[in-house]
Length: 445
Image (cartoon, rainbow, N blue to C red; front, side):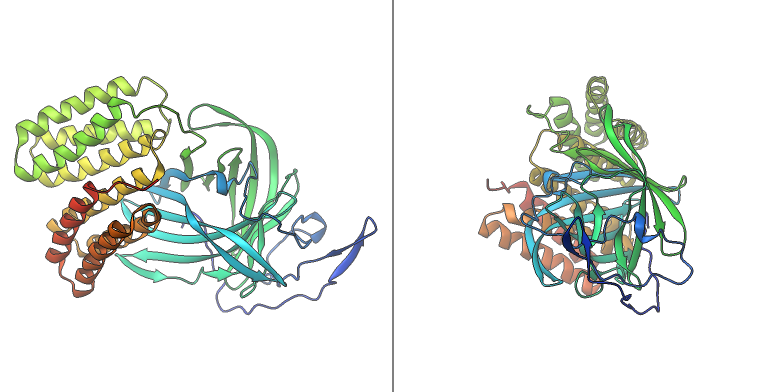
């Protein structure tokens, strides 16, 4: 996929023979034992690498590196396409931390959830582990990877952990310079990437205007292919692509957050989309048409302001699709289009609302999607929706009181049970009950 979790299968991890210490400026510096790279792979010489010295971690979960500010980004939305299909990723900082033992150190790491959706269906989830060293560099301590196909987990081989499968890997230098080389993934046989910094101090076209200080890099993969990646201060990974497949940053908070109430136009869009969803199911086409017209007017008013540039055309297209579906009185198409409009409306509301509130709304939309896919008899999509619900749940349960947490777990358990039994009708019924439950939830502060 676009993250290029490329595997080198069948290889065994062999640690290269190298000195464990060298003298630099009169001080002893411990080096990180390096695994052997795949035979024939043209890697940079060690003289160019900036990730060989063993880092120290005094405050590892305070990840403030401007080009990779994981602990300062509560939620990141990236949009693009893969194979000509719409691609979407949501990156969310989770509230827990973990402790990883590596080379005699016990390092507390931040935990981030990466969720990717291709053509509206979950395609990959990764739980990523990061820590910042005392020199400002950020290190990757592993990931749990789940790749999906037809609503089922089919690949987990990209999973790796520092200290078990290989060394922790630098994912961003503290002060990157042109020509610097580092390996964000350095466990051949599991994962491997090598990055060379191509340019720094670049001006980038950001979600809401120009951004100064961007970094451009070239990424070498285990199969010998290359890919360009761009990083932006205050955002982190900004753009990844090879000219055909592309993933670009659309919005991040709190970087793009505003201290203002949610604009009434965005509320009109989200509330209206949910009302049209219900009206289409009931065959109330006059109501649906009136509401859709109100939504279109609200968008025309809002889009003339400060709108993230990647979301604006997608919302415009989604509203056009919704209007056409309502006009043709096609219930299935109308309900699907209403979900898409609501999703973009809640994305835009991230700038004004706590992330957990938006994620609860996204959870409701996945329950609505499950109901739509059950009605269409799409069993693969039905299973995928249940997985999506499960992972969004992981982002919100910490913000619920004990009783609400139990109720959400129970509702999702019933849906998962229906998936196991292949009982789509029971799953749709459970999704309806979950939507009713979510409508009454209020996150705790």
